[in-house]
Image 1 (tube, rainbow, N blue to C red):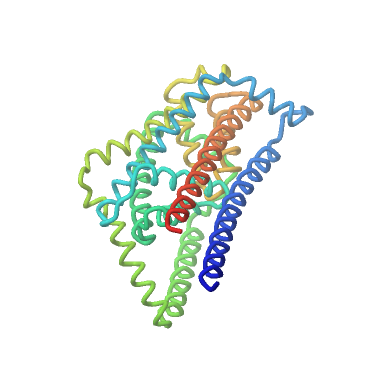
Image 2: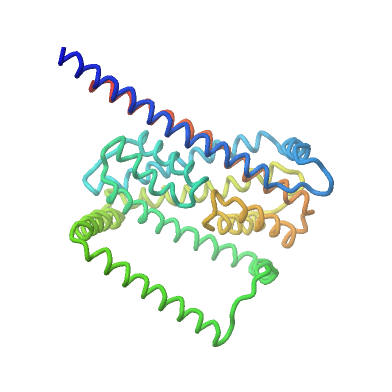
Length: 352
């Protein structure tokens, strides 16, 4: 009887755990769908045109062949990024498969649509659930990966300014920004620096005053540092940098395919595509969910100001590009969530 009760109790806990996990995944998917609704609701059609009619008309303007090519290029870039991340994890003494790193990466992209930069934490946590790779070490590899991406991004900005410096500088000056100048700029910078130093000092004093917290911080820092220097301990540095180059070339190719999807923008040359790619990259790194808002503001402004594209056409281009890219991430992230859930459930069933 006791054995039977214990078995039933174990089964109840197992089912409850499965239902709880399923609810968590469905909740994330619901949030993703809510984000899509919010993005669509934020679109302002030109004139008195109905929003949904504008949406349908915008979609019909696009060449679907170019958009499907963009989706294919996006998935290839994600696969390369997942493999590059897997290469960074190896020197930490842990290993994962391309399949699991890809699933974790796609879930991270999905979370980024809801919580800015939250995906960087989520993908490390998801990989821990799949392969028990320590969070602190994998998070260090993510920071190292982002440092390499930052270098690539800066190189693209430099190339864009070399190619079309006059236009880009004129565009920057046209933005409604009122930067501080002279002594006021120095004072503002000094005040921010002092405030950050005081906040950091007080925070450290509070945290380090607790022995348990201090031990956890030191342990996390040790693992984080181990992951951060993995770039220096790669087995194949050349392949890593080739992957990095290909990833950003694919990003550029994605911009090209969407520009070609519209007759209003298909005449733009390579230099214009490079400039718009740089502007779009800046918009996407602004800490907003999936670049929503910043992307819809900067890219149409760049199209209109730099290349005299009518505002309605510029908005149509921007909406389709961003919405299509977001849809790819939502579908890919949703399937990754489902796949991860099934893997974990299967493991639970095998061990039960």
